[in-house]
Image (cartoon, rainbow, N blue to C red; front, top):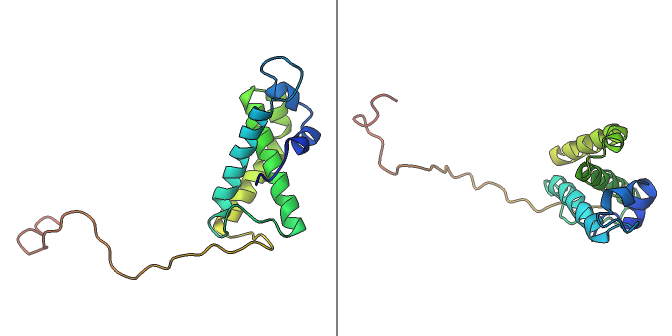
Length: 145
């Protein structure tokens, strides 16, 4: 399930037609828009997967709004970069920086997503794991260590 829609992107980013209209038809190319949404959602899932099961369920209205806004911002940035629309990129600098900061905080666990299922984590076994040469260390072969 995508975290935003083409309609949401169109209402947020008036330049969407410019960013996606490669064939000069005057309409939004839904394939390009879908790819940008998928790229944005992948970034969100990557950050969220550190602590939550992904894709996110979005059962809480506030969480759904926050994630949709993140997806809108990230997808808009992907599309503006695609066409090298410097004016739009400049205008979205602050919102993109805030989105990236939020994803970093989400990944590190500094912010939480209300209503989301915690990811199952495997605890370390406690065994010492060593890689490399399996020969035993002795006084004669330890020289120089």
